[in-house]
Image (cartoon, rainbow, N blue to C red; front, top):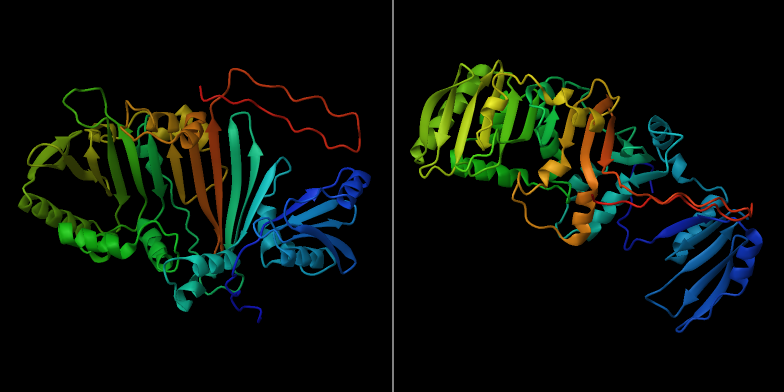
Length: 455
């Protein structure tokens, strides 16, 4: 195909594993005398001078095996995949020659990394589109394929696991990323006991970018049109014209615990949304219209004082829901659920940015940056804070082992975005020491193991 042509939709995907050979002689012996099969048979063929051993007559268990020189063993679920690996081994263009791969991998390279993940986005998007229940037009597929790659490296730390990630567009993509890294002040406006927050530098631009790609991406979690229609039907507001139009500034959506246990409170925590406005007049007009809509729906709308400043409170007819909205300088805020407005007005003396758990979790060196995600997993999944449904054992095991998670994002160029993630794990009281290295120099060294505990 032409250099810029999208890849054809793959009919099926195959799995390929490249394994290191520590003992070439033993490997040759094993491959020369394969185990007999209950069904089907083993056959051999030669491809470009490389001996390939494959199963035949076993449709549910098709394997293809080839030795590459004396160092590697290739195992695949498809003979075609084996041939392509041999082609690469013989000199055909490799993954490392993918546009932008070498330069971008260099940005997340870490000598201490124990693993690396790479996703070829054009190929992956073609496969997803071909197997999606939702039809994707050629125009939308072309939008998806503006992306070239995503990669991450993982490292172990005394406190948990760190990930350095990068995503990039094709070198000749028509789409470009606005180089803005304006997420500066929001974490200073939140109290140190904040359970969860997601923040960014420009909500309007984030929404516009999401909308432009959501139609093309079958994995998009929210359909923008559904959100627009829902808001219009409940409040009469146009999401783009009445709200996003004045939200071209920093923002955060956070979960803050109630100030103290109170039997009268129905909520143990409250959601807080804050956004810096670029048009105070337009914002006030929309919020006033929203007050009138809520009043017409039976809510009690009243003016109150919060930290000596004017605010507006909506209370549902039966007192089940309370919403407070107001201003902190040019930052509009709205709280829902537990009465947590006093935690942000006036500004907290002990902000989230200075808390020990935040500093140990959100520890990226990406400065300036364009947004953060933080969750105190232990507090979020504590039944005393949130009445969440019981998770299946396989999921609960991971939740119980995690202390907190932090993500920092930064735009590093008009076609590249960097992400730093840290998963802070709980420490076990007991651990199993690594076994002693094998004295056999040709045998692979055993990997260290650590016994983890959810407690």
